[in-house]
Amino acid sequence: MVADLVVKGGKLVTPEGIIEAGIAIKEGKIVKIAKEPGLPEAERVIKADGKLIMPGVIDAHSHIHDPDYTYREDFESGSKAAAAGGVTLLIDMPLVLTVLSDMIERKKKEGERLSVVDFSFHAGMMMPEYVEEIPKVVSLGVKSFKLFTTQPFKVDWQGVRCIVEAVSRVEGVTVVHAEDDAIISEWVAKVRDEEGRKDVLAHFDSRPSEAEGEAIRRLIHISEETCGHIHIAHMTTTVGTVLVRDAKERGISITAETCPQYLVFTRKDAEKQGPYLKMTPPLRTRDDVISLWKGLADGTIDMVVTDHAPGTKEEKEVGWEDIWKAWGGIPGVETLLPIMLSEGVNKGRITPMKLVEVMCQRPSEVFGLYPRKGALREGSDGDLVILDMKKEVTIRAENLHYKVGWTPYEGMKVVGYPEVTVLRGEVVAEDGRLLGRPGYGKFVPMR
Ligand SMILES: [Zn+2]
Image 1 (cartoon, helix red, strand yellow):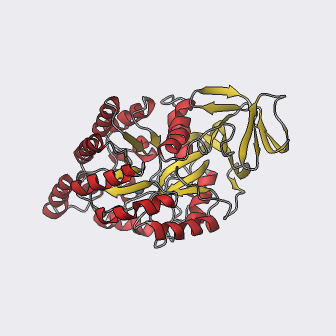
Image 2 (cartoon, helix red, strand yellow):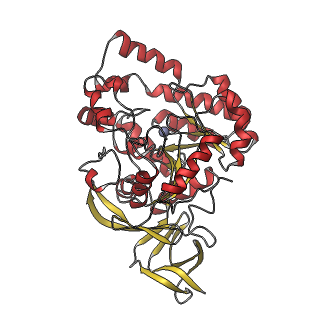
Image 3 (cartoon, rainbow, N blue to C red):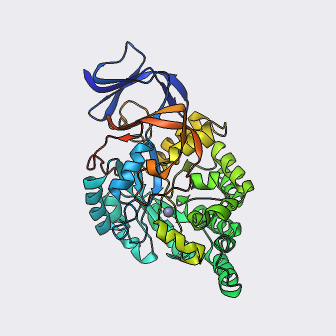
């Protein structure tokens, strides 16, 4: 056998440990993991020189391509940013347009025309009246359904229960934006309407931690009663982390994610960056940041995702005058892995094994892609990232691939950067140079 690609001389990071072995890929699949001389001949050989090699990163929550908002990002720009940042699979989340069977088919075509990396979809925003469409959505390879417990796509608690039950009948997962609407409405009325505040921190003050805590408390209860799998999107708080940890100990079918922005920034940073750091849920305190890192390290939080949802500079700048008018979202897909390498592994907050668990294995398992994706195993797709753990990079928007031309991490120094990104045996990015081509990315169905 002659393989298409052999990567040798590196250290493979798996959730169980680090093994010194080479890896051979043929026709897109990993065909052999072995020490030399057990590796086959290959068309191309990459010498990894003792560097760490991890599976391609999965960003399980990114708003990459909404047909109405492609001026912010689309499959082509978003997937180029992904490839350069070591992400080989994006799970695209609905942004504004409802994504059910027709839209999934349309977006699948657009993705297969434009995307450099592989992709999958979440359906949504779910409303109780859409539950009849669930089996059809599942037949298209989508088993994840997003809903909101608050505006702008609010479902009431009875509706949430109805959707979770319907999704659990097809063994799917319900992804929930968890903030309690009653609490938020009360605080928005106070901060915006009564006090008339328009400053940057008004957004933060209108969405207290307890809104997340209360929503997660109720969701745990719904999961317990229905046995439906609920996944908490972008968890930000100590209270949420404590509740999820306790629910998991009780065997309840709850999983959770957080994002780099909640692991790096606090509301203090918004005093400087202003509306550029407006996002929902908002940034929290130093204590919350510490809880989230601890939750990642101990397995309470299953994965790190981006919630990549860029707005243009204009859509952000209006927030200096009136924060309520600014777009609430940030770009993040290209800096996801660098931030986690630098702030997580190199600062000793998580091990390389944990990194692979939260960026590859768990996203793949939770969303029905395992073991095809997120694993360095024979038979899995040949997706991997070679890491340079010592490389120092100052993050600059001009070096990133986003359409919007800015990053909240501008000027931040990181140590550790992806060097080579391989997707199904093809090098799609190398030293920041993009080699992948639009149309190479494939839709990957959830099982
Ligand atoms: Zn989102």
